[in-house]
Image 1 (cartoon, rainbow, N blue to C red):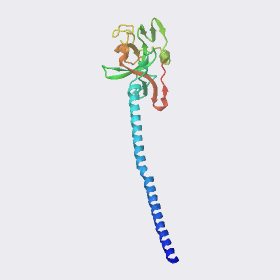
Image 2 (image 1 turned 180 degrees about the vertical axis):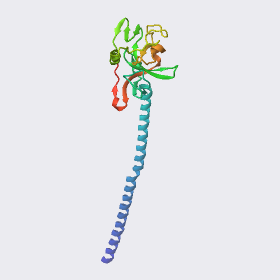
Image 3 (image 1 turned 135 degrees about the horizontal axis):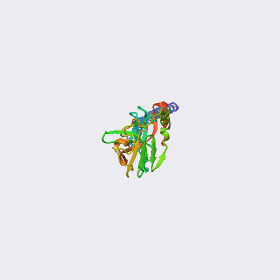
Image 4 (image 1 turned 60 degrees about the vertical axis):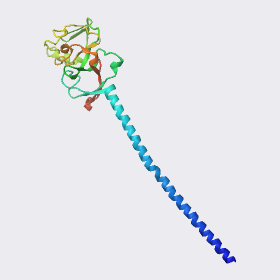
Length: 231
């Protein structure tokens, strides 16, 4: 009787052990599945986040490029010695939505007749009466110094010359542009290289609506990186 009871007890313990072992194994498998399941979800979430980040970055580039700043490449000698062919500039497109241009600022503007952009310096603003003769600039009857031309004018004088040229559009006003008063919503702009610049002396006053923006930074070549001086 005792032997039979012991056998039954042992049998029950074995069954219980098998049951507990099976439950433990199932639980372990469940834990493995549960631990592995989120990995696919995490990868998917990371991809979505990267796509969002790239989309936002692209949008920012578009906004900055078309509404705030724009690159510009100098082409030609008209702004020498202060700017040279091949230099790359950052143009601030927002500033003239806030205020009008000021004398001495370096502008980039569009010339529809030639379907290209020019870079020049503001000489006169609306209402200014301007006279330019030789190397002498007069605004509203007062002689104005141009510090950005100082070295060029001094070098020309040392050779017994003037820095300005002597062609039909050298001075201002002239036969091509006869009015000496800057109209409303326009500016007068000359190149720094007065000897070789197609500017307002030849093409006339610049409409505000054609102004792209103000040249603010030279970013290439690296040796020339600097902020543009607006004197």
